[in-house]
Every structure is written in structure tokens, then in C-alpha cells.
Length: 330
Length: 76
Image (spheres, each protein chain N blue to C red):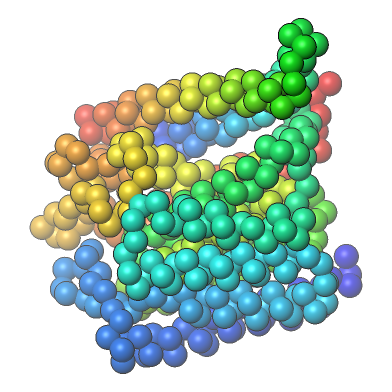
């Protein structure tokens, strides 16, 4: 354990400060190129640079490269490659809005390095009841998991600071769970994700100076999903991101098909004092934000705080699940 | 604080734990090969089918809870 501390600190410092120092440069670069989009939830017309995925992926690659130099294991390599492939998928979608099926299909291919490098264990662990070995089915689970986590994180990127704040909370909860299960190297890799998203949150929080775009959100999601697979904490990882899963679930069960989120009717509208309220449009999907503002209108900042509370709650449930992994009902 | 959404997350967590139990204790050890003398792959396929039916019921239940929460939120 002691020999892990110095590499962990070095990798974390690189992860945090690379994103923290690079993001302002990316902001200026995007502004110069007029790569900005309207922040639809601001009263005055506000243009925000997008995508910030570039600084996020640099932080991911640099910090994982440092970690790999200390611990040359295939799991760390796989996390880096899968995240980079997800970044490429995201950057394509940022530049040109693709159809609803593009991202799930392309992200399924991003899972290939996990299978090709054999960085997985086909045993699925459940708390209290033990585990099941599903060799063939697990391959399907890997191909399924990266698109699911990628799109789940992407679909929660709806308001200022939510996806980066949510990733920070989820990352820390998953890291703690991995430490509890004594999977130290992957726990450190997960800490890198937390610090990268924390550094980006500094610029993404309300009022946003930059948006991560699909390239940023997909990197967060794909990296999280890959950590869950290579760290053998699939169930815990799913529990931790339940608020985001609920958001995707609510969306899919309302729309009943896979579509690009920009193609649907906006589930929220604005009050006169520019708070967010549930739309009266019948066919608009019921999303997590719409559910939160159904009772009364809330400001963008209030909604972020509500979602972070839900993230902390599910993070605690995830950590309890990690403790329950060691308990078996006989 | 939106207590009903916290309750929704908690109920999903309980369903995940119970679902894991069903998978490990019942579906995993079940073998149709002994009863019907079928191929191992078909045996796995049948187990996947049962798991999918359970997931369908799970999603159906959650959809009902979601609609109930949304209606309750609007009314209050």
C-alpha cells in the first residue's frame, strides 16, 4: 500500500493541474475560432465555448501515462485507450450532429480494447449473494456497458456544471469502493477521473465558462464504465450513478426510442424570473430535471445542488454495497 | 428536498440487490440440460431469456413508480 502513495500523488497532481491550466487556453482557442454555443438557460444571450473535451482528454492521457509508468498493467492501458476512442466519437458528434444510433454503436466499438487485451474477469460479483460466472454473456455486457455509461453521463449534461460535478462525486465514491475492495491500482485510476472532473468543474460550474460537449461527457462516461469493468465493480458502479441512470431511464421510457437528445422537445421552460419549470408540452419527455421542477420552479443553481445531493446519496449507497460485497448470506 | 426521488433511488438499489440474489441463487444454478437434454448454449439462452423477462418486469414496475411520482409532484 505504501509504495502506491507517491505514484498516486504524482498522477493526481498531473491530472488536476493539467486540466486546470489547459482549460483556460482551450477556452481562448475556442473563442478565437468562434466555436461557441448559446447557453439557453441564461436571460441575456450568453455564448459559451464548446467542446472542452480537449483539455479533459489531455488530462486523462497524461495522468494515466504517468500511472502506467509506475504500474505497467494492461488495465490502466485499456482505460486510456477506451477513453481516447470515446473522445474521438464525441468530437465527431460535436462537429456534426449524428443520428441517435451513432453514439451507442460507435461506443460499442470503443469497448474492443477491453476484450482484445483481456482486461476483464467474466465473474459478476453481487453483494450478499455471491457471484456468477458468465463467460459468453460477459462479453456482451462489456460491449453494452461502455455505450450505456457514455450515454448516461452525456444525457445528464443538461445544465451548468452538472456532468463534471456528478462525475467528481461518482468518481470519489467508486474510488472509495475500490479501496474497500483492495483494488488499489484501479482505485487510483478512478481518483484521476475524480480530480480531472473536479478541475474541469472549476470552469464548468454555474455560470459556465466552457461546456464539455459530447467529447468531454463521453470521456467521463467511457472512463467510468471501463474502470467498472477492469476493477470488477460493475454492480457498485451502477448503484453510484443511479441518478444519471434514472435520467436516461425516464427519458427512454417517455420517448420510447433512441434519439439524439437535441432532437426532442425541451422538457423544461422558463418563468419570468428565469427559473426553470416543467413544460406544459404533453409529448416532452419526463427527465430528472423535469421531475425536480415539477412541484415548483427552481433556478439552475438550485437544480444542480439537488442533483448533487442525489449523487451523494447514491454514492453512499454504492459504498454500502462495497461493504456488503464481503458479506454473504448463508 | 425531493424525498420521493430519494425513495425512487433507494427502491432501485433494493431491486438491484434482490435482482442479484435471484440471479445468483436461482437462475445461475438452474440447468435445463438435465431436465430436457438440450445443448449447453441453448441452456444459457433460456437463462438469458428468463433474466430478460425479469428485467422487463423490473422496468415496467419502475415506469409505474416514475409516473406516480411525476403525477404526485404536479398535484402537490
